[in-house]
Image (cartoon, rainbow, N blue to C red; front, side):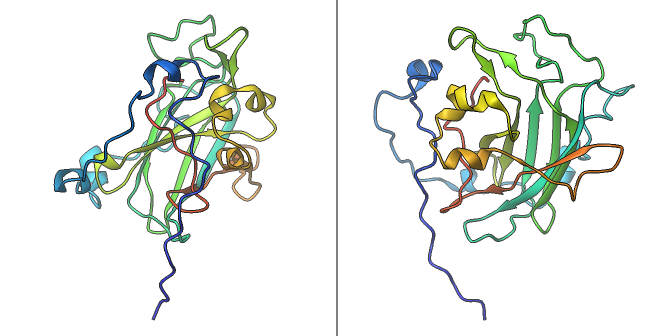
Length: 238
């Protein structure tokens, strides 16, 4: 018989909805305390277990979506989705989106003078397996400027979105890369206090690095509890 561990309370590492250095949060953060609305059946149920049938084949290799090879350093990003007790969370949809190697998104609002890559769209999707594992092959994204303050640059990052048993359970976070000096001066990253900010930084993983092909990075996502991954309050534009 498996022993039942007590529920692990959330830690203080979640970013606030209002963070002065991240200027756009001043306009969009709520001015009144949030109101708790009990979830209904339509918000807590969904197509869990049949995501593949609903969405089609996985989009796990972002380097093989077009007619040629994208430009940039090929990387493998993999890890597990875990609950507060370290147990695997299977059948979780993980979507990613990112800039290309030059730091530009394939989006009409991204107009800074970095080149587009015709062989890189920057979007992928997989469903975690029975051990909660996921894996993407992609290109290491580049840094890019943004209008938050003078000479502001976002560190290289990948956005991750997770869907649990229902669409209403969506969580969004960002993955950073080790030894990136821009993390220390980035207002979005710094909305998460230390040491929790380190949970957003992937680690180089030689075990998943493929010889003569791609560097490997490991990034586990913990949904709740003392080791919880910091998640965004809402959908950020950057």
